[in-house]
Image (tube, rainbow, N blue to C red):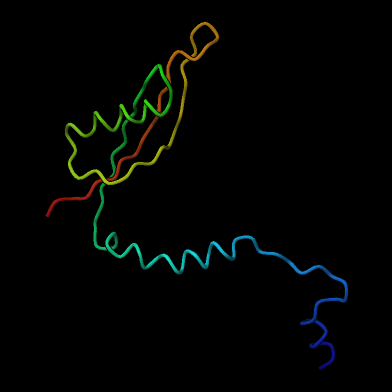
Length: 106
């Protein structure tokens, strides 16, 4: 019994372990109820590549603007790749691969 008790105790002077993600997991459990309205949707994803000579953010905006012309009910996007084209040792333009999620119509 003494041996079993000893395994449960922290040695004297030993530092207490800190788990930095404990708060995150607690937050995740608390806030997961807020996503109730998303729970009933079904999404489809498409992948597009946007480009711009002015930066990756504008490349994302260009991809979304173009997709909006033919895709309805866009809800979110995810950047999966970022590339740059090099001209004369400088950034010529940016290319960004974006997955776009949209809800399916009834």
